[in-house]
Length: 114
Image (cartoon, rainbow, N blue to C red; front, side, top):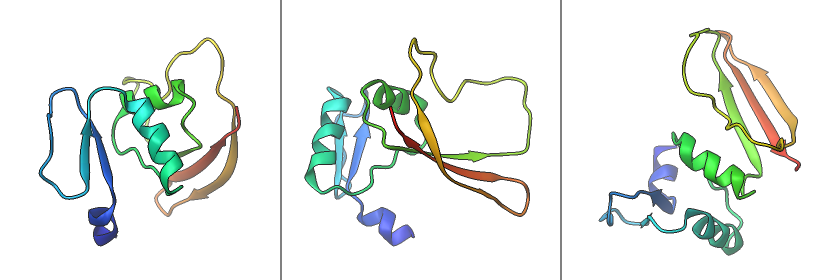
């Protein structure tokens, strides 16, 4: 898996990082939605967002998310930021798969339908 990640084309959304010397990495600070729209039309490969709530919110707002994958852990913290932003109109999703792991973690995949 590490080799696959290292060979993926990467788009970094950053307002502070000007560029990257890592092969296959582009830094975008201007219009993330436009850059993702362009990528989706290029090769049709998966686009993965790793660890950025604000990027996910921006892509949801731009209607650029096709699938949402969640890991639900059996712990109640009682605080923290919401995964999904407040919005005037809901984004409809349909459950594609759900799997429970040995220690109670749920892996869920939803297809965005509207």
